[in-house]
Length: 296
Length: 190
Image (tube, rainbow over all chains, first blue to last red; front, side, top):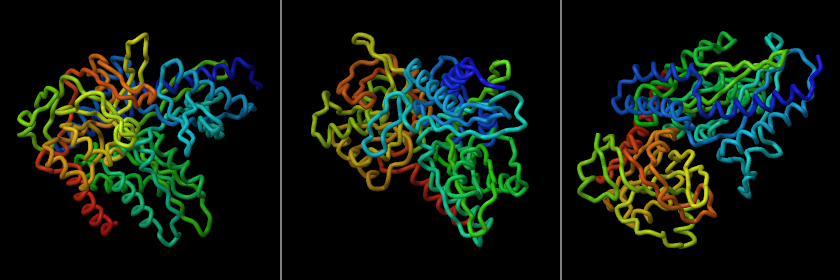
């Protein structure tokens, strides 16, 4: 099927709505895990921090406030069904959605030139938003859009390593643990830890980000990935960082591992740290241009 | 839990220990990177006496209608970026800093010397900070946008946790040392 301008207008509308929604409504799976973790945490101060996080989420919802002041780097993940689409029109529509969300809601503009630090003023720019497009043949509907206004505090704690194949599973685990320990309380734990393994220098960071985006409780498609999710979750929560770094049992809400084939001489590993906010909002656009917002 | 009224005097904060929870009421100032550069690099004197005052590290997003400011969102930012200016800030008589993340052993003794406190606020808990602000009292250096100097009236801003006390104990550095030991042991296990 072909797409009319009405379709791209829907994409703009959804992109705008998702950006704001991700900043104000914490995904249901994340809220549930935060509540469960409150019960598990046994350090009194850690518990108090978890309680504060829960209160903050409730106040944000009741008073229509942003959960966190960091309106993030706009990242969109688009999954397409088997459709013919204009990529320039798609990207333009998402960009307009980001601009509208920023201007209409007076969101803090974050995007600056990396050296001059001059702000673009509306969170868009030549390379912003960051849009990833993927094919999803099993998709029910035309397009799924996920908005991730990624906070900088946790993003700055993320890391990449090009390990040697001989480093193996042990090397991967070591790197993940060291990265989370180094992040400590600075990236606003408890974290959702996205781990990418394989691919190349570029793909591995994308895998890690996809991991950080994946709902808590969902599992890796790879068998070894699933085992690692369980093992790393236990190990990370033995580090003792605790909520906001005050010490305690809850350092991670979850660990999501994404795996891709890699080169015979490579073992890339990336760790994308996501803060407790777990910002993410998603919607599906159907063939009849209906919009279905998911989760939250 | 303790309720504190700003400005703080030495007596009101004396018994506070690491991990104690406080709620603050009164005026506080909001500033961060660019504000501090203006004061300490460009040597522009702060417009008000900061003796006994509490500073929150952050940058509000706001709208201005006429002369009236409304803060849309403000939360705490990473205090470590302000470390360079903390000794000078404390020497101005500032008695409390609110931020997130640890401060290093380099500045920790300054809190003992000046009888000041560092409060940890939950990072990302902007809704709690924003909803505790009753009104914006005054804004200076508007050319710095969100990094302008804000004076706001807060009611029961909290919970804030004592993360460096007046004896120079440092909660988050204690955890960090523990994490580093735990990491060493875990790396033996894997």
